[in-house]
Image 1: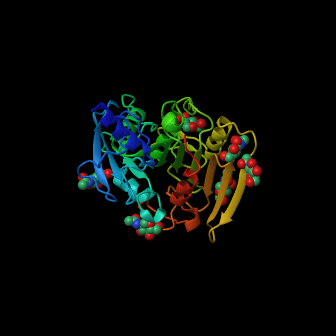
Image 2 (image 1 turned 120 degrees about the vertical axis):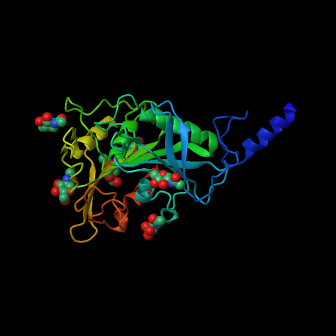
Length: 322
Ligand SMILES: *[C@@H]1O[C@H](CO)[C@@H](O)[C@H](O)[C@H]1NC(C)=O
Ligand SMILES: *[C@@H]1O[C@H](CO)[C@@H](O)[C@H](O)[C@H]1NC(C)=O
Ligand SMILES: *[C@@H]1O[C@H](CO)[C@@H](O)[C@H](O)[C@H]1NC(C)=O
Ligand SMILES: *[C@@H]1O[C@H](CO)[C@@H](O)[C@H](O)[C@H]1NC(C)=O
Ligand SMILES: *[C@@H]1O[C@H](CO)[C@@H](O)[C@H](O)[C@H]1NC(C)=O
Ligand SMILES: *[C@@H]1O[C@H](CO)[C@@H](O)[C@H](O)[C@H]1NC(C)=O
């Protein structure tokens, strides 16, 4: 009996891509068949029970067509903006869209509703201190790692607006930075506290790869920072925010700056510190997820294909693993 079991796990361990410990590891979903109701390339809403302060938390899950229960794949978390939801974020960030070629699992967590029904994330000035979205995120990763065959060294986080602000919260969290390899906030809402300072940032490793995208015409979370539309908090100036990350990541040198012109009025300026801290400034964009086609944001302006956030993020993430 015991030797049979050992033989079984030995075979499992010999299969390529399998990362489970020799003794059946309950924290590893490699080799497990798909849960009932889960199909490849078909997004589905799911929930977990959570200690985050709200007992049941939701998320939307997409497994790529190529998913194989014995092959480890990367995972990307994509957090929606305030007032939006997981399904909206899936359409906005396009990580489930096979055209962009992501061969991993994409996960779109749901924020918690406010009294007005608006969904939001930790980092927003109205967010209740009784709720811990970092705890939810880590619980969600535990659950996903138990159920699916995930390369735990290649877990990433992206988000839009308040969801991007929360991506920044994760990038500053000691536990989350042990689990998440790289971060990609888009039109990030990085709020200052009442002391007009950014909250403390304590990642547990250095450097933290982080890439931010911002429209220079953003009026919701202005490039230059300042008061938000609700008038209850200031966001940071993006140049200050990016410089802070470059410093925190140990770069003393100035960024490499490149610019390109998609077409008239569509200049994109890119800053890079050794590709680790990267920032895009879009001359013609507002509070948008940079895209070459209308994508669910109130798109007042588009960018060219080569400056689409989705493909830039997915290409850049390939560099990073824990
Ligand atoms: C899944 O969640 C989205 C919000 O993220 C909602 O709009 C949609 O109706 C839900 N779908 C189902 C089948 O419940
Ligand atoms: C997938 O991406 C392509 C190329 O960007 C786009 O044309 C298409 O509309 C997207 N599909 C969906 C369902 O959003
Ligand atoms: C926003 O910043 C301005 C200028 O520093 C300051 O006067 C104002 O009190 C700040 N507002 C909030 C809500 O923090
Ligand atoms: C720059 O990146 C390369 C490749 O990732 C790495 O080997 C090198 O240590 C980095 N240099 C600095 C100063 O971070
Ligand atoms: C700028 O680019 C050069 C050439 O690719 C590279 O050697 C250098 O490390 C880069 N500097 C920064 C700050 O990324
Ligand atoms: C961002 O782009 C705008 C518009 O082209 C430009 O005026 C501004 O100086 C740029 N800022 C930075 C830091 O690149």
